[in-house]
Length: 231
Length: 256
Image (cartoon, rainbow over all chains, first blue to last red; front, side):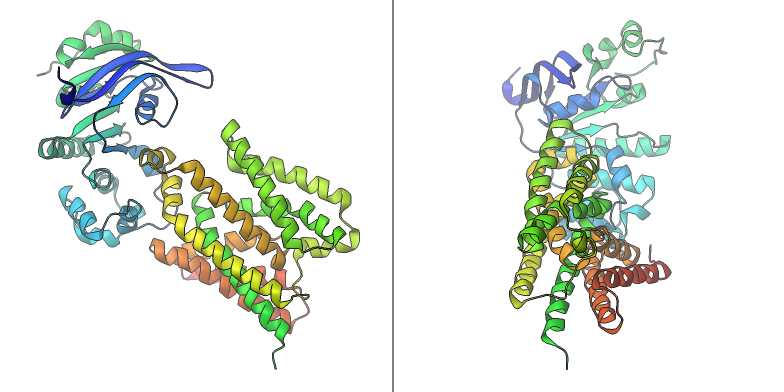
């Protein structure tokens, strides 16, 4: 595979935090325009993996990005801190130093009206806030989006909206997406490749081949129903 | 005829009050409003040294604060304990040491401040330093809000979080050091926390909130100084009581 077609190469990645090994000898690749879902139970090291890929925490091994413009989106953290000061949607975009026009266009792209710019983000519904988060993450037209547990605490309708939106951007902008989740159902509908993580990489590849009942049991520690799927 | 001393006192207290309120809005976003209290208290050894050796109390306070903040910053990097926990560790030790040496006749001055002995030079310096602190806070404000929302996100956007935190803490030291001139070491939490809380009640966006903090802080100082001239009460408590009054009013007109 040509190096240019790769967005990310990870070789023998290990992360140790507070004398505890969180990730051990993990290797994988992500092609440009690919959606890789990192699947694993709570505490498997998924968020740590994203933090290592972003260079926020120290690690051993090799992380090689072939693209520069990367956007990170941790919706749960944003939900928890959105009320720390009175922020309007416009203020929220201004933290990224983007113009009002760009912010307005970004809102439009996720189906939110631009008159929401003057609205307090604390007053938005959960669904509106999720859309806003995506608009905010994608306002600078990144090549890659790192998405951490995008649907935690969101109902099924909201979850589907988020994935439909992501799919739209993926098609339009050739967005490369790395998405971490504990939610198995996401893999079938949206992943090109799946990486099962529970400290070590337990499976990797096209979901239909990588996700066997045996692997799922190994990953989650209990029997997991094997859904019929198209991929 | 208003005396020169009163004009100087008004200029100094309003500018310090305004910048403390402005910075306080940022401290509130980082859930650090109460840290102003411990930081004020840990200036006590500096004030004590100044009183014993006869130099300006703010200089003593600055030196001790900068030393303490560097220690806290280093501890934070090393231990990852919350800043407020580390501040509590350092401030309580500092207060204990100060009371070993603080002359008993100077206790009131150290604790609640004194603006009756102002000179033109002190006022000009205090106002200039308040303006400097204002400009620094304005420069770092958005990045600090970004960091408060998500440190990981800020780092992923290339924001040098450690550098911004250090500049922020040094600015807090500067403002607390100025604040002890007007309200003493006991009441500094009030000049950073109450105006920000007042402003939060009345604001619907970031701009209103940020400048509202400065206005609430400046106005409380102005009312406090006026009360100080009419009634025989110290300026520090008068300013804080005025600020609390504005906060009470804001709860009636709360917008959000």
